[in-house]
Length: 272
Image (cartoon, rainbow, N blue to C red; front, side):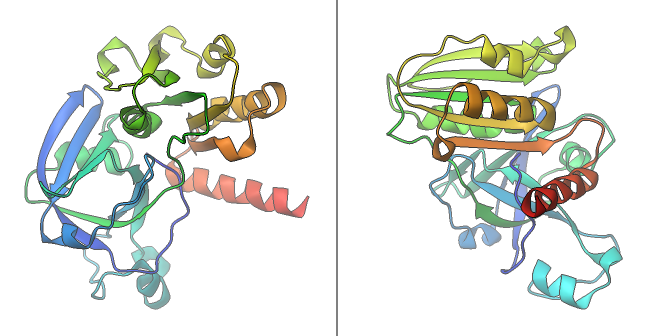
C-alpha cells in the first residue's frame, strides 16, 4: 500500500479479477486485467500506486465513472470509498496488473474484499501515481517498512542493479508472513516479527551505517515512521530529496480517521 491524497480528474478503469493467490496467511495477491487495462499508463516509479475504488451498494453512478463528477453531483453518503495500493507488477504483454492486499480478518474494507475476490469480479481503479524509484546517485539504499510497504520494497529491490548495496528492514507478524524477495543487488534483508516485539526504528538505528550517499524509503505505521524521520534527517543527515517517507496507517485508527488526522497535522504545520 502507498499513501496519497484522493484525487479525481479522470475516469476510473474497470478491471476484471483474473486470479487470486494466498501468498502468506495474511497476504493475498490479486491479478487483474481485461479490456479496462488498455487505458492503464504505467510510470517509472517502484512505489507506483492506484486508488482502489469501492462503490456504495445500490447506488447508480454516472458513466464514465469519474470520482470528481460523483463528488460534484451525488450526496456525500453515496461517494465511493477509496484505498491506496501499490502496483506490485505490471505485465503489458500478458495483460496483467498485480496487487498484494494485507488481510487481517473481517475488519476493514480492502482486505475482506480481497479475501472474497474471485475470477470475473470487477476491480475499479484510478491512477497510477508515484513518487519514488531507486536512483543512480546513491551509493547504497535503505528500505524500512511493514506489510503495507512490502509490495513497494519488493518492487524496488527487483529494480536495483546488480551489486548495489542495500539493506531492507521489514516488519511482519511472524515467520509465516515472510516472503521470498528477488534482487540482483547486494541486499541484506532483516525480517522482524511483530509477535516477538519487532521494532523497525530500533532495528534501523542498530544497522551499520556505510559511508557514501544513501537513498532511503521508509513507509508503514506512523509511529516508527515519525521516529525514523527524525533519526534519518537530524542524526544521519540524509538528504531530504533522497528520503521517501510516509505513514501509511496508524495503529488503532481506521483509514478515514487516519486521513483526517494527517490532514489536521498538515494544516497545523502550514499555520505554524
